[in-house]
Length: 178
Image 1 (cartoon, rainbow, N blue to C red):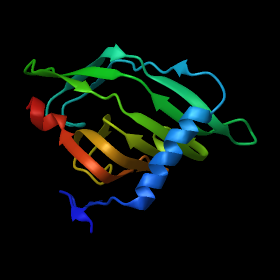
Image 2: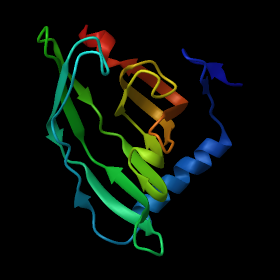
Image 3: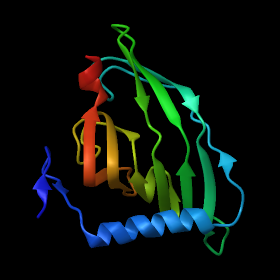
Image 4: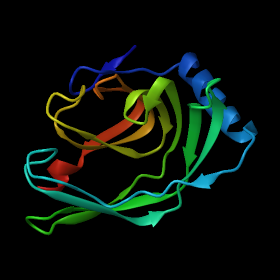
């Protein structure tokens, strides 16, 4: 039976999610081709964009790699995997309050034709990852959210995010850094 989360999303678990997880792991293990580094750049967001205060984030540990698993006939990426350790130092630049966020999850990203990481794509994730939400930009309130567990994040053509948390936790770093 689903359990509601704040915001009304259900937490669902069961055999279907276990099969999806198994498929993810097998696809990542048997894919041919090389893993290549996928470094994260430092980033800044203005006050009001995600939190009530300006935020700066930069990698402290960044060992993320990616591998293309499948391509469309035109050569564009259809499916790719991400793995590796990632820790970001996230700072409220008004107060100086800072925290290290472990974002070392693994993801399988499926792209619709013409999709990007943040539009027309679906992420299937195991472990922690960070997603920023602008006002009315998804099914979570404005904030910088870390999800941990087993979940998917679907991006529509306009970048609207829909998070479905099958099993796990979520936290808003804006609240922690306020």
